[in-house]
Length: 420
Image (cartoon, rainbow, N blue to C red; front, top):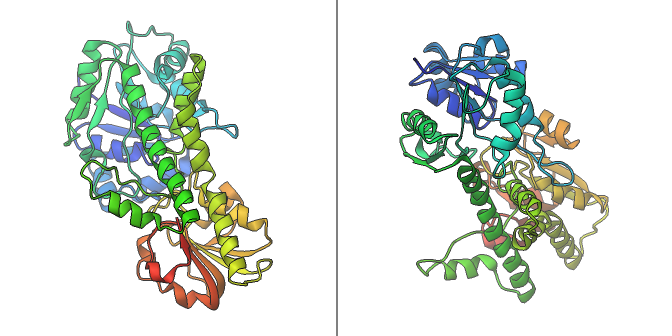
């Protein structure tokens, strides 16, 4: 039987994967948002993960995006790539997964396979998602239909490590299905695949990848706080330490986005369900979640030391997205700097050439601009290292008496008053 693929969820993860699958298999992309579908079928991806040229070529060759569930009924290999956020209490929110599982349940047939890519804690696929598919479809798991788990490894904004160039972990609900899932992925992933023995192993592997990065970044963020008190430049220390062959060169900074700043909470929640309190994981989260407020405090201290009137001063923030050269503002920690500074009654302008002002307004209730604002500012904060800022003469944007703070260690150090 010919493999016909449906990817459910056409965001940063789903669209690049669906486009890649379409080079080898009949592929349909499904998304609940008709505006997103219409934009994609017009040949443009607002996330910029798939170029217009690649997308238009895929559509020309038969790739289709749809919001109509009837268009995916004849597929037999379903891939779920929807977000897995946390709620206001940092608890896993599986609502998108439940919704996608209901969609799968409405269309899945005997012999079909559903593969989940969304980041979850071990056991979610079998214990939370599959029961929904069973209930809606009336089919029995591992008898009438089968499942797999292959964690997404998309790096938003990275045009070098695209989906086909990142090794993929695969798994199946039975050894035989694992081999089938692996074969389909390995046919398009040029970097190769790793077939995990079980879906729970694959789920656990994903959730610790980003937890490990989170903890390492938390460590250097703590070092940054310590060395700042000592009057030592953290980046100089890291550069010196990096001369040792096995030193891990992590950099201090804000930790946001839909992965590193979220996944550790999924692992922590799972651990707590088993009666274990994950001290290191949650300590790392507390450290990283507090960095926005820390940056704001450092900026205010520098302004006071320079005799700059804090209340009513004009602040320019450069960058708002969660990372450089990417329009994604999900879980951006730049908002933490903004909110902390707003408590001092400052006049803040946020300039980001990548972010969509309408999205920022809808998600965070703040106004940002895509054009460099005129006038001179009391303080400039480089929050995101967009390539557009590399040749920006920040000194021309500030008054003679000013503060320049570099969150990313991106600017010429001789120009800045402080950095992490």
